[in-house]
Length: 94
Image 1 (tube, rainbow, N blue to C red):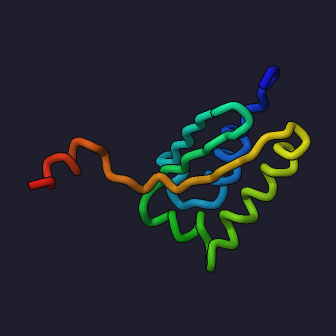
Image 2: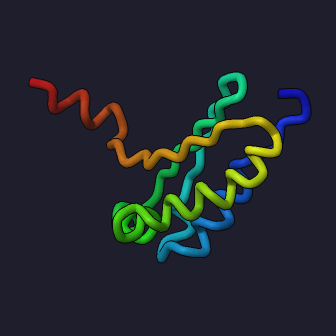
């Protein structure tokens, strides 16, 4: 991807408008060739709004980003990153 488009910024703007806790929204972008993986982390109370009933909201957000991605020959994946920090999960392994 030569002049790669930053898909993180529009996603962050969309998500922060939807949620009750916009300051807690974090978007991580990983690019692997023509695949862009975007990870959404937010306040746990906001995940329902982000995903929507039956996943409709997250699919609609993906479709908005996909308009540009298809033009660029890119595949977009949106992921909810609701994992706990690794340090707290490592303590609970025993």
